[in-house]
Image (cartoon, rainbow, N blue to C red; front, side, top):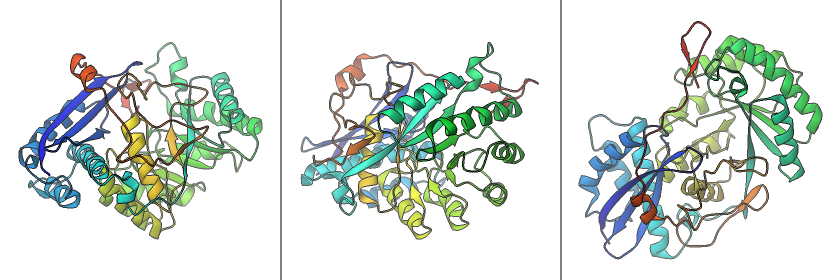
Length: 387
């Protein structure tokens, strides 16, 4: 079996989102689907895939590990988020092909399944206290036991691009304290601050809430400096969930070896695909750290993450943005007529060959792609801050 073509489909989905789907075709009619996770820079990834395509056509798609090495090490400048996003998409597609070729689900290629269901956390995005409490109540009533809060309180202002950290932490600490009183102690609560804070602001945020208010804190500061995170680890006493932006096992290494991260937010569509994600999982296992995969990208990322979670012993929860309280439209059923379906707050581990997802290629060809930029946030003095 040989690779005959690699096609890239950047698509706009209903609700304003963007996804990049990759299809790897072979000479025996089998094909595989993959997805890139570098949101907002899809065309850069398409360009990288075109470079890889030049030497991948004619290769055996079943030799996944060897092809991964050639894509990663086949140029002088190794790594980086653009290249790894491209590698991720192709790698996932190769697993889809091999699973279909052998007639087995992808997790069988990763060691077999270790669970029957993949439990999810509800991503609760809110702009007001009322939304926070309402959306959380709905999820809890429907059986969701883990709420990961994605605050966007700045969008409730007239100027939605203004963000002042000290104002934010005072507001959110009060709202989240109320939420804990509302849902009680049985519900797990995490907060994703999306790298909008610094070390001092993160410390202040945690000190403004009673002990036990939140169960984990996701990426409060930027991750480029592991030493800064290590200092934050020393003064903050809740678990950290880190890694959704990491594009290799090497980026995870200092956070795991120095016990900085307590949950690994691996993104299978950014980190280097299933090949690299399984290595991150093994590294995390040696430090008693569970995976909590990043999954806001759509059905292919969800499917790959389900197979990853099924095969790993150290797994906690998969991110889910389409909940009983909020429908973010990332599952885009017009583009994905066959995809995995939630059963309450979890996915059943499938038994279909490959990933178990189908893509409407004709619709993607018809659509004219429009590039979309993520929002920008600015401080009161006009300086840019992280979104």
